[in-house]
Image (cartoon, rainbow, N blue to C red; front, side, top):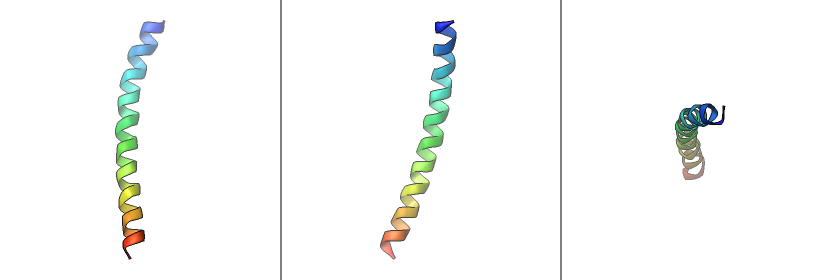
Length: 37
């Protein structure tokens, strides 16, 4: 059970990390635009 959860969470974490990185980039881009104007 623990091993199954571990393998699942690893793939899930990678996906979450990817989504988070994308949203972080969008957030930075948004903030940059906001502050540079």
